[in-house]
Length: 613
Ligand code: ADP
Image (cartoon, rainbow, N blue to C red; front, top):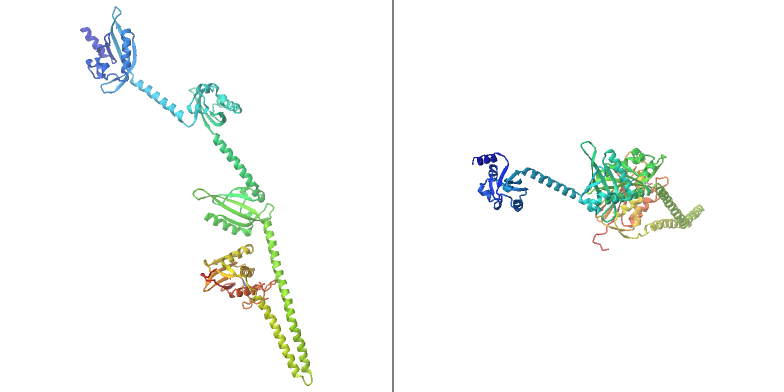
């Protein structure tokens, strides 16, 4: 008893959990730490195999281990979870040792249970984090490999193995065979270089994919240095950049084509920032101006064209609208040539201007040709006019000559009859009657000729005078610009149509605008402007051409045929205008403006809007 007490006290004193079993496995004794841990009595613990003392998942194994050891007397060693008084299972390392008597028979089993819960959980956490890491490595959208300091592959993630359609073993032993033969040397050299310098590796090479095709991959390798600073491992990331490389190649190719195209077109091409600063010029711009992009300034534009060009540029920058201009640009040799410049904005999805593209075409030759054509036309038209007038004068002279000759003859005769002594008054009377008759006949000739002018019946169609104004401005565009004349068209919308001869009415307006232009020829102290207006005025439409020229010397007689104040004028323009307008049932007149210049007005009967066509 004394012994027993001492044994119990001894057992209770050690902090480990100790139990003693009978040879057939029944619980005979447990120390205090066991009772405290389980929070059960010895009696209850005897029933351990049919209670929750051992975790249900570990129970079958615990029973099996015990029942194997008991008959054999083999010590056992196992790990299992046991439920504490707080209801929580903790991991224990359980070791059973047989205690034999002198005869060598098993007298008791001594069971030592060590709490290994913390270690077990740490191990589990480590396993868990390792699993998560592997999962992560396998699922990152990149191919990963790890190699030792000699470059031998130790590990490759699933994505890499799947991509190469290989196993880890195969990859480990024959990694180089997967690399494109042409790139193997490059890869090897690069690896040797990086390994020697201990620097990251970065290159692009071809590798054989699962489908047997070689594709471009980008490889980045980072060395991992050990405590002594030596390379312990290499970590590699591979990315398939084949599509990207092809796209880049296509893009480069396209860019090359585009550049070729831009350089080949016979025009000066440039690009500017949204604020209008040049940021690209093609080869031709540099060759033509003899300057680099940085040297190109506003002074390449002819001084006379700078103001209007800059005004247009500012307007476009403010509104973001496409624009064009015709102006002279200085060539490298100092000569100016005419260019037609067309500028288009390029916009992003939000509609903001990203840049401006400009194409300039040399139109000097075309312009010179046009000018030659215009001058020929001018000469031709005045030649025709001179010819017409010459013809007209000849026929007038011819028609008038006869009665005039007869007048002179009769006047002579009359004088003779009057000089008789006595004067033969009867004969003189008769000859005077003849003179009067011939005088009338000459007047008739003149009247007939004038009637001839009037009776040129116009070919009438329905016309929109506003459209004719636009046509006229189109025809005279170059001349107006060359003379620095600004045109203001104030045209009434919904202007009634008129019936008339298209060409004649166009000619009338051209004559009036021409005269206006000539009247402002010597005007330098004010803006040279012409206002062309149209409006309804009762049953008529009123067309006006207002200039700011020098005004007419004789406003009352300017419509008379052959009246001109110009050295090379015919004096027929306004007279013809009057004939045309009157033949159309309208009136034409001129008034001096209050300020400067003249206003020429003419009316034409409006066609009632309900008139059938
Ligand atoms: P031309 O133009 O050949 O002289 P026109 O019959 O067209 O013949 O014009 C006759 C004259 O009327 C001109 O020479 C000019 O003196 C005067 N004239 C015509 N239009 C204007 C105008 N807008 N301002 C001032 N004078 C004008």
